[in-house]
Structure formats: structure tokens, C-alpha cells
Amino acid sequence: MNFRQRAADNLRRVREQKPLIHNITNFVVMNYTANALLAAGASPVMAHAENEVQEMVQLAGALVLNIGTLSDDWVTAMLAAGQAASEHNTPIVLDPVGAGATRLRTKAAQRILSQTRVSIVRGNASEILALGDEATTTKGVDAVHGVDQAEATAAALATSLGTVLAITGPIDLITDGHRLLRVANGHPLLPTVTGTGCSATALVAAFAAVDDDPVAAAATALAYFGLAGEMAGTESRGPGSFMINLLDALYLMTPEQLADGCRISAA
Image (cartoon, rainbow, N blue to C red; front, side):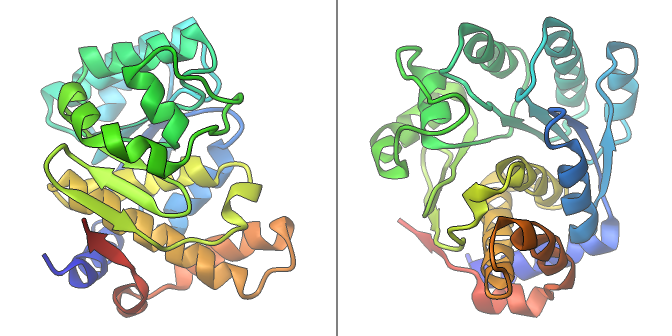
């Protein structure tokens, strides 16, 4: 697979098709996530009321389920939306924020995985590992494990969960249990801004809306986001300016720049 061309084509399709991305996401990141999707060329909607999510998801190109600020009502809405998306073969991207920190978060993510057809799980190494081993813990919503620690079990875990895992860190790892890709794009300032991980998840959903291969969709979206971070970092003095410059980089990057700069490799 020519990943450079695939990345460029996916970005071009997002901008041409402007897929609606239905987000049931957390209060902390709603604004920034919506702006990241708009900058990429997608159309965001934030809808979490149980009595509208099934209707809304039928209009969407992909569904994001993000458990960052969780409540029992939101879990119910996520399951309803996820089941509707599964019935309509709409890609679902799960962000298991803080899985491993509390039983509520871990169990909610596991219920979503067992009761819906999740296409991609995007999270840090600790969050991903907690989905398969409840003894795995996180530091709040921050990872205490590196991507390299998750690599040994990633393929088996992807197979057992029946989904694609996108484990993000200094070098991202994406696997469906058979194929394994690495993405080396990124910048050290990305973890210093709240919402960058959740925005990466939303962009993975946007790419999944236009690419029916979830492994390729996840890898090319993370390359796009990571390269935007690199471009933003060259003009930023710290997290504040980086946060704004990242949105500009997502908006200004051309498919040709993405093809030239993406660093995706097969293991």
C-alpha cells in the first residue's frame, strides 16, 4: 500500500465530501474538537441526548464515543448511538479516556466494545491495555505505559476485541491483529494542550468516514494530525500559541504536503 498517496487521497476526500462526524464527547474538549474537524474540512455535531442520538447518527459518516466526562446517562446514550451506527454500518471510533483509572470508565468502554461494532479504538497505551486487563491502571487520564509496552499484546488484544487499535505516543502503533503500522509524525508540544488526543480521535473518525479500511484510515489520520503538530511547532513559543497554530496547520496543509511529510511504515 502506498501510504503517502492514501493519506493525500483521504485528506482530499474529507475536504470534498465534508462528512458529518457525530461526537458524543466530553465537556473539556468539545470546542477544540469541533474546530479541529472544521479545520480539516469535516462537519462536526455534538449531540448526546438519548432521545436524539439514534436519529442523528443516521445522518453521520462516523460516530465518536469519548468517555472523558462520563455519567450513567451518557453511557446509555453512547450505547444507543453505537447500536444505531452498527445497524447502519457507520464507523464507530471509541476513545476510552481514563480507562483503567476507575471501574466506571473501564466497564463503560468494555460495554461499548461488547454491545456495538467499534471500528477503531484510539487511546494511549495504558487506556488500551486496560481494555484487556482490568488490573492495568492509568494516572487519571494520562498514560503510565509506553507504546512499546503495549506492542507485545496489541495484536492479540485487537483480535480478541474484534477492532483496530490505534495506540498513540511518540510513535503511534496501529493494528487489527494481522497488520501492524507505525506512524512517526508528531511534536513534543502535542501532549501539553488539552484536547489534542481527543481531536486526533475525531480526525480518525473523519478519515474512517471516507476510507473503508480502518487500519489505513487510522494511520493516515494520525500522520495528518502529527504532521500538523510538526508544522505548528515550528512557529510556536509554547502551548498557547501551539494550540492556535495547530488548527491553522490542519486547515492549511495540502494533500501534497501530507504525502511528502507523512511517516507511516509497516512492521
